[in-house]
Length: 511
Image 1 (spheres, helix red, strand yellow):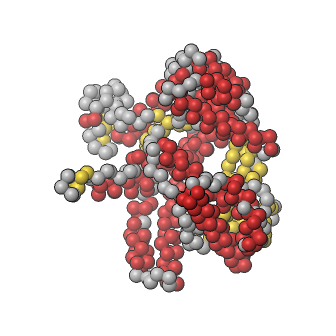
Image 2 (cartoon, one colour):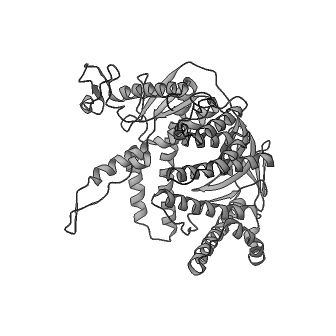
Image 3 (tube, rainbow, N blue to C red):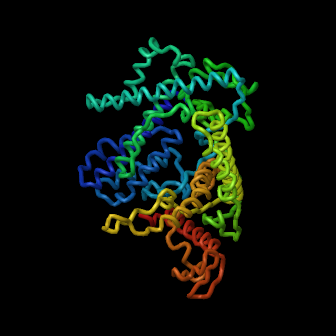
């Protein structure tokens, strides 16, 4: 990516953030001049990069409630015309510049054209020598020390001087740090900047949760045993030789990597991470060309569940999965062995590795199944409709119920813990994220609809009643007597809702 493209991406991000802040101020009853003076000129000046179009569509989507506003309505339609001129399309069709509507569905995924390029991350296994493995371990230890020192600087500056320390302030001190600790810079200064940027991301996430009312977690000091990754945020300090399958790391050497798939796009940054005894590299590439698939003319709705991982509107039930439940005995046995080992001993470290290896196997099985299901859905269907599930809220533990006598009443926490464990084992969020990027790359439409009443509404007559669902797997309509599998009936309702949402957006009825 050229420098001008990077500037456009940064400009698009600033425009999207400013648009959201201005929308919040407008809803709070503040002045509208901020919109006319700052927000719309930024949107109109967006670059032609894919990220610019995504931020523009996201901002316009949030502002669609004000299309009828006497002041903001004409400017919003003008911005929609600008975005449409950039070639922005969406999962529900092109943007209508006259109506200012179209695909501004919060859960829809943009459909790239054949010329659109995006960003992708490729993960490869590293095969370092014993000396290179020692160098990587020493690098992680040094960056862990730098991370904790930078965090202590921020905490101390605010506690004693009420002064905020930014990322740029800490990057400027790296020159002085090199004179005191030259061992931290054996692999270059780029990896040190990546560590400081990682701390900046942690504080940005903390402040974001504070603003949104979520439970914030203040950045904590990292133990050396838990600091398992380092990152290079630009192309300095490392190089990639795809022909010989070698990764050159400054201070480490030429590390062999297993490139099991071709690399598309231009490598821009890498992250080297450790998982147990293995080392991996994640290569982030820009300008990755899309690979659209031929149209199939098929549509599908999917219902995600716990007993059956996925049910489709075609009547297919996917009962695979639940890998954590199947491996529960093996995990419990490894954990019991770990509990008998003395802390700090070599036997305990080996037992810890055995526990981590068992958990990684479950995670890899779950990821492999999600890849297979998402790829099959994207290859076989032009339109995929799923539920807009809020997984973190669904797996949240129930609140305690004080009884006013110094104790607590029963709140169903034990039963909810089992449900939360099953939801986490199903991996709904992972499957959804894989569908998003694969559908975008293949030019498919992915729409997420409101899941309310999809499990209780009859697909034959439309009657909705909670008693329609006799059991977890049986659906029998009390209005017309229609019988079907409960999850398949819900998947057909989801597909019908997705088609209606797409038709409404195309016709401009959502305004």
